[in-house]
Length: 114
Image 1 (cartoon, rainbow, N blue to C red):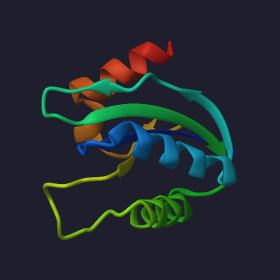
Image 2 (image 1 turned 60 degrees about the vertical axis):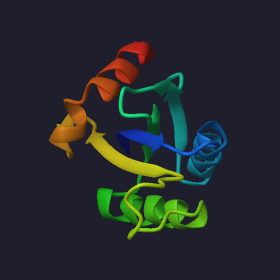
Image 3 (image 1 turned 90 degrees about the vertical axis):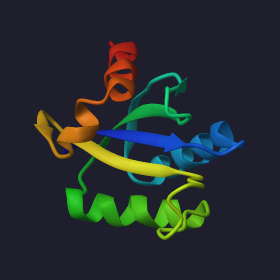
């Protein structure tokens, strides 16, 4: 069983709804162990961190998160309008995405989980 720290972000007018819908998808992936409050960052994104416990490895979890992004309208070619962005930042104590792990919005969301 792994514990993943996953960053959700959206920069659309319906960001809170997109994040809520993405959170619902994790119910089918594993146990949700925590969710930070949604925060607005300086770059106009709304972000939160969800902690998920699952037996899926990182590759299988990535497949699931990419399917959720697509289901919620994410277009890989559109870099401006992001209905949902899902990044697997950490697995247990391993940092998988160092840039996101050091971002102020991720740190702030993580602090609110403690």
